[in-house]
Image (cartoon, rainbow, N blue to C red; front, side, top):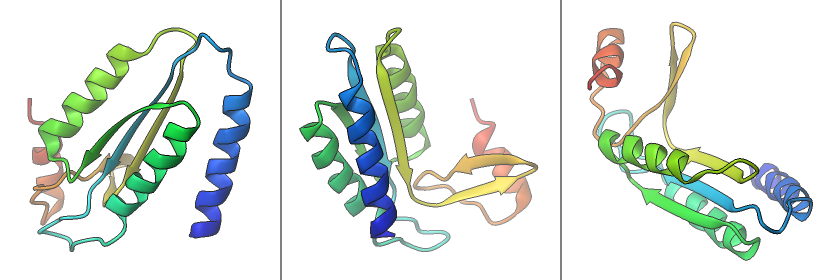
Length: 127
């Protein structure tokens, strides 16, 4: 796993070297570890903390969310999208539980109570 992270960060470093100086480098990092349903995960919060250090050193303005519930995740993604301008470099990284249902992928927020397929639609179709 560490080898893949190093490769990923190396690619980011190479890409950022090609970015025009006036372009913003923005990153949204979400690490969810403290799940009650589905089991707690030890690494996601550590992963986003490490990513923040590296990306900040590469000139990224980083927004970091740890153990985010549904509302926090939605607000963070919307705010991140509004900050982007044409020509900016944007990086989104999520560490935590994810799932696929009916050919759609979902990032699982903290507090999601998913015990069956019906719960997936209820969790993600709220307004």
